[in-house]
Image (tube, rainbow, N blue to C red; front, side, top):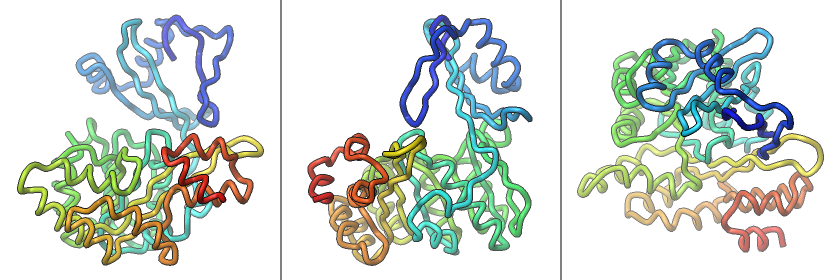
Length: 331
C-alpha cells in the first residue's frame, strides 16, 4: 500500500494491480495508528521502518511492515494462516520431520523473503509441541504464529517488545533451562556466535537465514567473523550443524497456489570435513551424491516436480540460477 497509487496484491508470487482502488496517505496513517503500539510507532518515526502483527476476529492475523518513503509512509501487509499448518501438509521431504526429533544441534532454514521459512519453522515447533514434552523458547521479530498449549512449554519473546535484540535474548535464553531455541533470524555476528554456543552446549537451535543455498549459509556464518576467529567458528559449526534446509515457493502448474521446493543438506562426516577444512564449494557435490541419506539439491527436487507435472519448466527455471543443471536433471 503506497499513497497515491493503486492497491497492489501479491497473488501466488505475482503482483496484481487493483484498478480503481487508490490508497490515500490518510488511510495509511490511520492503519498505522490503529494497528501499531506506541513503542512500534516510535520505532517507525525514529528508524524509518517497523513491523508488527495484528489480529482481527474477522480477518485473522496479519503481519504489517511500515516504512517511510519519499511519498510518505507505505505498508506491506501479509496475511498469515488462521492456524499453524501441520508439518506433513507442507509437502516437505520426510527428513525435515525427522529433524524435530533431534535433541541438539543447529538446524537452519534458509531462502529469500516469502519462501515459507517462518511457516515451516512454526510447523516444526507445532510438531514438537504435539509429540514431546520440551521447554521451547522462541525469539522472533515480530511473533507471527501463536502456539497453543500442548505437551511442551513454549515461551514466545518478541524483539523490540520483550527483548532488545536477537543476540542478547539468546544469551539470556541459555539461563532459562530451554531444550529448544527458535531464532526468527540469524542476522549478525553476536546472534550467530550465541546460536553456535547454544547448540554446542546441548540445545536444539532452529533458525532462519536469507541465503540461497546450503553452501552460502555456511559462508555467511563463517564470514560474519574476522581473522583467526573464522578457524574456531568453522570447527564449532562443523561440530554442531545438523541440517540446512533451503526453501523456494514455486507456482503450481494446474490451479492456484504454490508448492515448496527445497535443497537439503544433512551433516555427515564429509560435510563436517568440508566445513572444518574451509571447502564449502565441496558441499554441493556432497549433497548431489547423498540422495540415499535424504539430501537433495534444489535442481534435483525441481526436476522431480516438473517430471511429475506439479510445476512447469518455466516456473522451475524462475527460482534457480543453475538452469543448465536443471535441464540436465529433467533430461
